[in-house]
Image 1 (spheres, rainbow, N blue to C red):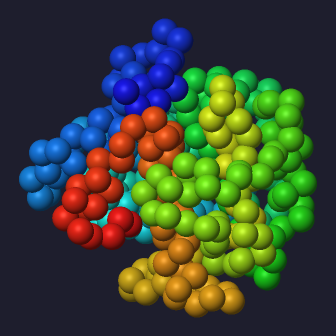
Image 2 (image 1 turned 60 degrees about the horizontal axis):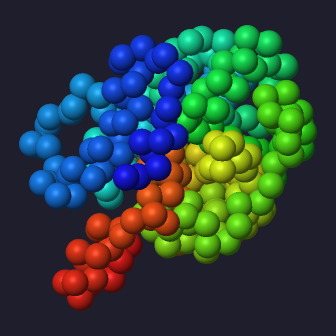
Length: 267
């Protein structure tokens, strides 16, 4: 049984939260076996991304592009509409993955926000933090994020080791790139043996964001479109990990097995 079943062990959760908590992993496994839903249909409990409203950065375009890539590349049923929530709002418990972006120091989190995030991340939620500084990673955002995370969990960020399932959850990746390539690594916080917080300093949203007319909003440096594709793949892997965690470490990867038997290369 995939660890997503165990990790979403909510304590007396509302039924709607319980149902949504299992949706992503169930949809991934089911659609591999019986095929995707009829075109145009979207399950009522489809995975929906949410971002934390703590600064002036609005990542809606990037998250919509993220969802689009997930829907095109995988069997995950993802809601194309993203949500903006404040960390103090109990609504955060309805979203398995929360996204927090910034290019400057955010305001100090309230005690309520700290408590909410601690509970959410301790009971199965995943928080992706993205340093979206333009020329380089924002030192002010970096410092503030590390300070606030220590209020949530009294442990420092650590490097996600090479070969971790995050780098294999859908695509096989060697590094974690975004619009920039300041660092090849992901950092994270483990909660209950799993990474509940993942932090990239490479402006992942910058590689995903699109203009209103459809083209990408920003150039990717230094690797251009090849690097943008790597960032897209990282985004897919992050969502897959948030939904199913280390199912690849515990079970045969169904999609890989099917492709291997057909003589095709894995993703």
